[in-house]
Amino acid sequence: MNLGLRGLHLATPEPLQGTLLPCPESCWDRGEIGYNEPLFVSSFATSTDIGSFARTCQASHILGLVFRHRDDHDSSTIDPHFRLSESKQLHHTLVALNMHLSQKTCDIGDKSNMEVAAALCYCARIILYGMYACNDYSPNQPRISEESEMQRISMEGLKEVTNGVYQLAQRVLHAAITTDHHALSKNLLVCHCLYLASSECAWFAREDNNLEGVACLKAMVELLKAIGTKWLVAGKSLYV
Image (tube, rainbow, N blue to C red; front, side, top):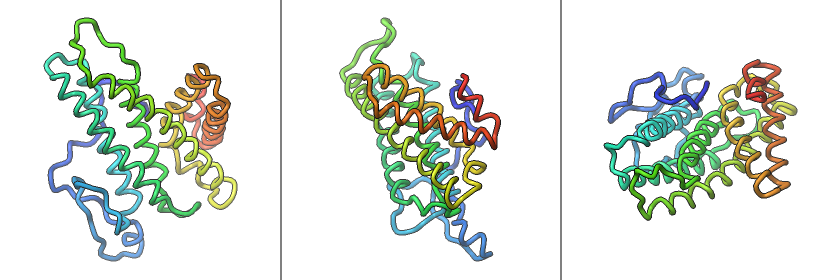
């Protein structure tokens, strides 16, 4: 899954208002009537567990919105104030989902874990921040004050995300070693997140000579190698 390609959206149509998320896996596995929550909500539910597949659907939808924002970035027909306003809204939504997923992280080995949803959310954040972290625009574009604020948000966000991906990598590795021997097979969709985050870690390590960044990079590379024993495509990320 190459999320770096431009002009290609996710292989699903844009959801309609009123679209419902899948019911929790626990209800489905027991053959019970499940409950469904809407995709479009003003805040993420804290009182109910909608399940890992539904969380993955949420993360995928927001990732698709980031794709569209990225591909429309250079369009001269879009007002720059609107574009930056949209970027900040995407940032706030992604941060809220990330925080919610971290609170919903289940015990290691639990099949309702949120690693894939978290990885897709981290991918969306890295792609979004990568657009604005370098305040270098075409000389033909008008400059506005909101650019500097978004640059600051992006730089801080990249550091936060790489740390989050580092913790995710440690979680999956620990699960693979201890309780869940199928963890590596189940986490193929984590690979691109690891690749993007490791690239940022390498940049931070070169720029700041930060030993913590080196430790993060090693953990991500170790997980990519481990997943590569199950899925060969994961190993190819190490040589891109």
